[in-house]
Amino acid sequence: MNKQMTTAEAVAQLRDGMTIGFGGWGPRRKPMAIVREILRSDVKDLTVVAYGGPEVGMLCAAGKVKKLIFGFATLDAIPLEPWFRKVRQAGEIEVMELDEGMFQWGLRAAGMRVPFLPTRCGLATDVLKYNDLRTIRSPYDDGEELLAMPALNLDMAFIHVNKADTLGNTLITGTDPYFDHLVARAAERCIVSAEEVVDRLELDRDTARLNPFERYLVQGVVHAPKGAHPTMCAPNYGWDLSHLKRYVASASDDNGWQVYMDEFVNGGEDAYQAANGGVAAMGSLPLPTF
Amino acid sequence: MTTHCEFTLAELMIVAASEAFRGDGEILASGLGIIPRLGASLAKMTHTPELMMTDSECLLVEEPIPVGPRGDYVPKYSGYMSFERVFECVWGGKRHAMIGPTQIDRFGQTNLSVVGDYDKPKVAMLGVRGLPGNSINHINSLFVPNHNTRAFVAGEVDMVSGVGYNPARWSEHMRQDLMEIRHIVTNLCVMDFEGPDHAIRVRSLHPGVTFEEVQANTGFELLKAPDMGETAHPTPEQLAIIARLDPHNLRARQLKDNPPGIRTASTDQ
Image 1 (cartoon, rainbow over the protein chains, first blue to last red):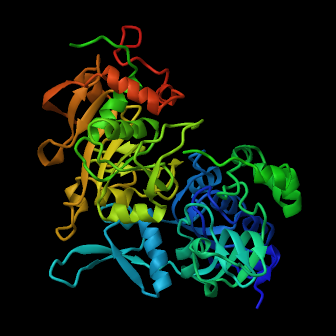
Image 2 (image 1 turned 45 degrees about the vertical axis):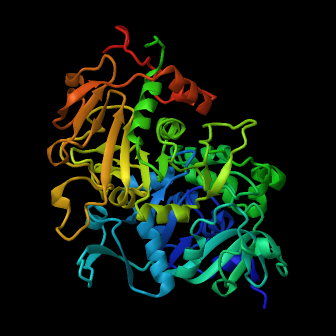
Image 3 (image 1 turned 30 degrees about the horizontal axis):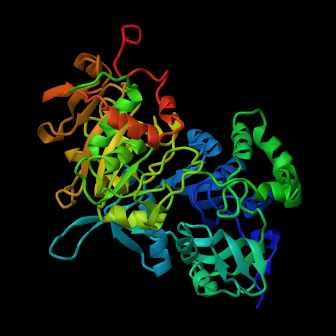
């Protein structure tokens, strides 16, 4: 059994109109090497499900997004995601805008194969007004009215991890695994990209705890060093603020997206690394302090 | 004995922010943004040491971490608080967050999503983020660095992201009793929701600010708290702690022109 594949083979599994989820959180540990491969592909009409960072904005900029299911889109150090903002303000994408907690409840429901999970989150807000969401009454004596958060079933999930093996075992060595386990469980298929891929992970008791989800959830393993750049991949490297600023500028420059694509994306991942100072420079970006 | 001391408006607001957390006990205090975070930190360092705080990432600390680059400072970690655990904390109601929404209405409903028409907004901000879940599950306070009628809107906010005390939004079977909006700290005053039916009252005015000025900069009618007075000035002890918590003086960059805490004729509009 060997699940290793290239980014091109991973992205070749996508079909127009699919619902795809991304791991990570905002500008943190996003599978950007895979995103760049999607940007180079012909795939379109995607429904994108994410705690959104630049992957959301870039896919919007490239016209790949039909619908966005999200709780936020932000670059954190730069609060407003420029391309998300631009296409959202132009009314060019459908949105399902959810509370962050509802979002993970939807992923959980999908992973548990139930149609919905009850929550108070979202009640008494316009989240109920703008989405096709229903409420439900508790069948017990309390009779409380709760929101029935529907399952967010994904056709495909992409997650970037620190280390993986060819069987699909993964390690997240950053201090926070975010909600990647829920993204993996919600998906029909899940492909991970990893900073480092080995034949077999050989772990001790302490590092085995850093395995976020089981390998039966993983159908593909892509070796993508610096594959989260320009987002952060703790503890390996921080986010690249100067690159993010360059990306932000692309939303206000004439023909900005095409110029960004030509400068960074169209030439492939080796050219991307060269355009960002090489892997050594990318790997030594300092982790941000909060 | 009172001693005369100089302080900035940002420092006055930090002290006012800390007061919002007074007596909260053993819950997670989250101040989002420099002034709210310093407020929560000051609360923990002074009147409410039981508060729990994180490193603004995913580890718990018993000593609030100074803001900005840390230099030689080594955080004293005491536990783990991953993003996932924060949601468990939120849903259990064990948190008080102070956040800065884009719009607030007379019900305390907040907006962090869009300004203007929802389908084709004039301005798209971050998205509702955690506001719906936070607001319905635990204590929230609000921070507004620029008190004006764009922040405090007439009618309802453009997209209700965080719940408030608007009876039209609640059914009789929903649990409204789990929510509380505590204080609103602005650059002009401190407000609360202790009027009839949770109407917003001005609790205290910052030095040199009049109620009329606050009202003129608010899109809905305000009440005066019966004991409305002047917002408490920072003490020298509080200022010393704030300086330790903010060694790079990031607080000086939070408000336009870093105005003094007591208005002088030249800064008065």
